[in-house]
Length: 202
Image (cartoon, rainbow, N blue to C red; front, side, top):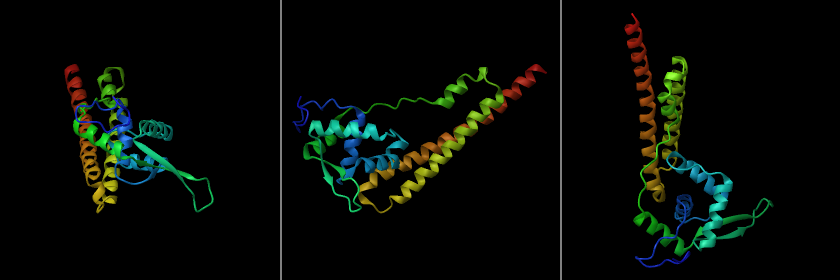
C-alpha cells in the first residue's frame, strides 16, 4: 500500500482514521481553507452528526494529510499586517483517495452513546424530579440543535457545492426534532409509571 498514490481499483485504501477522511472531505469542496475555516465549516455541518473537532485535532489531521500527499499548504500574507495565514488545498491524489473512500469503504453503523437514556436506565437510583429534569434539559437541548440546523441549512441556500451537506442538515433537523419529541414522550411515560405506582400502593 502506498500512502500518497491514487492506486488502482484493487489497491487498498490508506489506513487513515475516519477523522482524517472527514477533514479531507471538507477540503474536497475545492477551496483553500485555513485551520480556522475548517473549524468553522465543521461546526457548521459535521458537528450535527459526526464530529466537533478542536483546533489541535484539525491541525493534527492536516499534518497527517500533508504527509500522505493528500493535501498541500502555503502561507498567505495578511492585509492587516498580522502573521501570515497558512491555507490548505486538496491534491489530486487526495481527491482520488477521498472519492474512493466515500464510494468503497464500509459504512459503519452509528454507535449510540446516549447520556439521557443511560440516566433513564438508572432511574431507580434517582428521585423522580431528577429524572424529569434530565429529560427536560435534553428536550431543550434537542430543540436548540434543531433550530441551529434549520438556520445553517437556510444559510446554505443557493450554494450548489453545498447541496449534499445541506441535506445532512435537514437530516439533523429531523433527528433532533425526534429526540425532542422522544424526551417529551418519556416525560409522559414517567408520569404514567408514577401513577401506576401510586395506584398499586393504594
